[in-house]
Image (tube, rainbow over all chains, first blue to last red; front, side, top):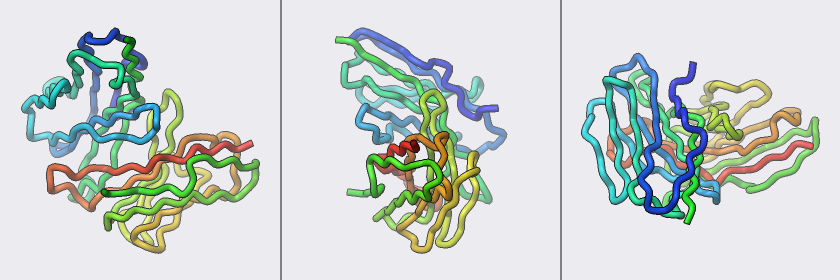
Amino acid sequence: AQKVTQAQTEISVVEKEDVTLDCVYETRDTTYYLFWYKQPPSGELVFLIRRNSFDEQNEISGRYSWNFQKSTSSFNFTITASQVVDSAVYFCALSEMVRGSTLGRLYFGRGTQLTVWP
Amino acid sequence: DVKVTQSSRYLVKRTGEKVFLECVQDMDHENMFWYRQDPGLGLRLIYFSYDVKMKEKGDIPEGYSVSREKKERFSLILESASTNQTSMYLCASSPRSWGAENEKLFFGSGTQLSVL
């Protein structure tokens, strides 16, 4: 079973629309980290955010916001007023503790291809 | 600026060849990782290493091996390349554990390997 599920394979929106990318995760740990990465057409993965399991506060950074809900095991990502430059593949990822450390190992979802049309 | 460098952006090899993919990081990170990325499958972990000469299997280690003789360098080896190993290979590194808020997995630009 996948630890991270991104049910939306592809999303297309028109510029200035708001869009939400869904992420559902599965873990038995009480301490874990959640991530979002962006992969533009150039290919390099760009870090967007990291949250730990004890911090359920929603976060806003410019046009980006994240909604973390432990009750539903979800960590959704919203882009407000989308722009063409937001077109990319977005990955949600989970990191669990191993032998008392994160060890940096991430489990990735399959990604959501977002296309923003002008 | 922190960097994870992969030696080749594109590589074309023939079936049965031995292939080496090299990765170097300049951040003095303990952990290093090799992922492969395939359309619709996301990133899957092949091998990782949390110290020099240490290695652990990830989710899809079959057909691969790794070498970590120095802290900054982590090599992925395809002993006998096959066509189903055609993929994008991504190297990453991270500090041993995340204490500071900005600590995360740092990625290289990837190597697109084609096995003919």
